[in-house]
Image 1 (cartoon, rainbow, N blue to C red):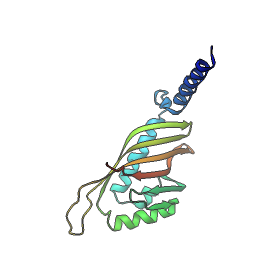
Image 2: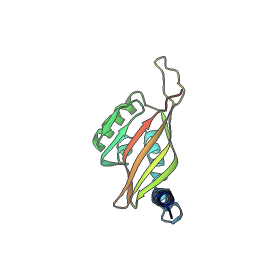
Image 3: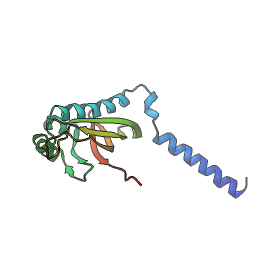
Image 4: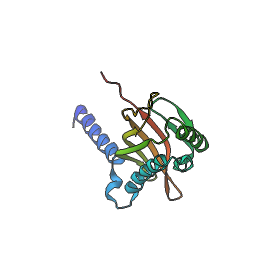
Length: 162
């Protein structure tokens, strides 16, 4: 095997190794982790939709973070609870939240990176009229602690349109 072919072969082996260790390998192992991670995001929606800031924040690790699509950072479970309570009492009162998980990447036995779409509907403008839903993408890092899946970090973002 010449040097060029050897390098190409090494590249293929490396690519296959990376893809197999970073893909959805847990999906088919029957462990229930995939369902638990999806359920975590559904529980976040339920807490938001009920306006319960304490329950919302309970789905984060103690040092977890949330970054809104507007760039607002809440760091630590207690700050997440405080910031969400202010939002639920103010501009987010009565809104509906939906996280639609589109992909889960397993980066370790107890760590998942999740991509998806987020939507907040029912926002009111300054004129009191209901606005169009706010749509964004999100990525969350979820970890399993003591048998429970929690969000460590969640970032919402909007892609720029050309």
